[in-house]
Amino acid sequence: MVTVRRLLGVVAASAISVTAATSYTGTTPYAYPITWNPQLASSKLRLNDSIGPVADVFSAGRGFIRSSRAVYAFAANSLDYKISLRGFDEKSDAYYDARNKVHLRAAKRLLRLCEKNRGFYIKAGQSVASMHQVPKEFVSTLSVLQDKASFWSFKDLEVVFLEEFGKDVKELFEAFDEQPIAAASLAQVHRGFLKNGQEVAVKVQYPGLQKQFATDIATMAFLSKALAWIFPDYQFEWLVGEFEKNVVRELDFTQEADNADRTAKSFAHNRNVRIPRIFRELSTKRVLTMEFMEGCKIDDIKSLEKAGVDPKEVASLLAAIFAEMIFCHGFVHGDPHPGNLLVHRDPSRSGKHNFDIVILDHGLYRELGEKFRTNYCRLWRALILLDADEISETGRNLGAGQYARYLPVIFTGRAISSNLVRSIAYRLGATRKTCLMAYVKNAVSGLSLGHPGSPDLYEQGLLAYTKAKFDYANLRIRLEFFEFLIAAYQWYGALSRLKARIYCNLSLKRLMNISVSS
Image (tube, rainbow, N blue to C red; front, side, top):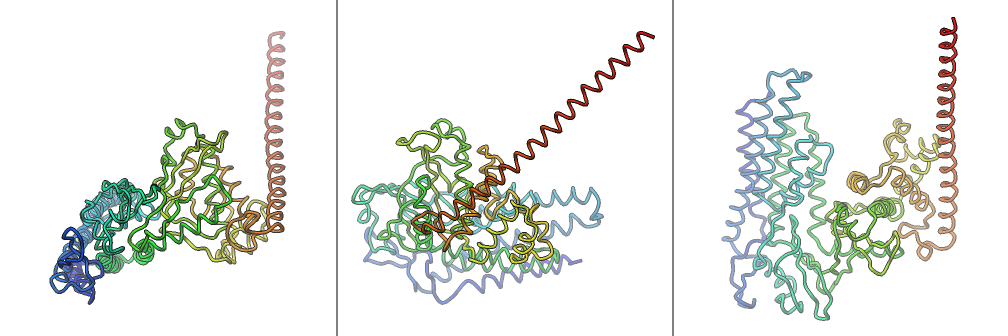
């Protein structure tokens, strides 16, 4: 049992050590503006790489305040768990009831912390809310952070353009709306027009994030280690490292631009998938200028129906898009929530495919190794064909070992990105078979590819393209035949039961007639 004195010692040490470790690094890449620079128009203050000891003290002070809030929340939650659950039998209903109440109080403290510290804490809270491994009280409480990002005044963002381009916004764009149209934890988006009249969306990173990032990650890492020390059963130390790796990628908008261009090329064969075009001359690590695209959120069923778009067709296309990413491209969008997926009604098209799915926010992707991608395709094909030997071999290749025989139960109907995509598809009315066939089709295509990427004829060549089509047709016929046998068996069973019921009724009538006669 960890004593309260020991716990408070950890808290005090963490407040001091975290601040000391992160308050000064020798440089301040994006500290808050302190010094005067006459070169900037309209008396702008400039963020500087070496703005002196005053800025360091200011930054350290902000870091101490943010770290202190985190330490307080950590201490309060730790004490709550230790004190509130003391004396309970861990197998009793009373224990589970008390633990659930502590979970809820702890989640609310974390929510207040995220709302106070904003920035990366909002991002971290959103990450926790999307996980299924954590208690449901944390997921439900922190899920409000998905739409919690608040707008910054544009006056606070103008300096980013001056630093990145050496020009004012008015020099770069024909028109620029200072009122943002969307906000996230790391950036916000404005609408504008280029000099040639092209309408664009401009994503601008909040100032000061780089310096803030170092402090916040150090705080999170220290507190996570302290939590593992106090609670030996704590198994989420890996979260901080994973979060840090992802945020580093998202802070570099040139990486997002590269991801968008790569995905656009991979889906060039599919006219129903749209990726915003990137304007490289007006994009840097902290500013991203892209084609403006309109549409409703993919899960807004009322808007879809009002526009004359069939939600089930949207679900079918969504499943196919992400199945192709997984099995063919080996390059998967890492944040497919409804805010990043829009549906645009195309007035020039009629019929069931009268829409496009617009994919936004390409900052986070998962790169699948070629060996993994190929084995994953083989596994899915084997699961459908119930090929026990192939399931066992590919399962071992994927690290499942002796548990490979359980893969049909684990994987059927699921995929790497299934948690968010599958829930959206089902909300839109997709059936389990719709998702399953999308995975199967792309798994077969993925096995026939000469190299990862678009599965179309021009990219893969006639031989690979024809083989993929033939293999899928063969597999589809076998599946349809299998479904026919199942349906026939069910009909036979129904007829047998009906026959038995009729026979029982006739027998009962005979017995009744005999009884009356006697």
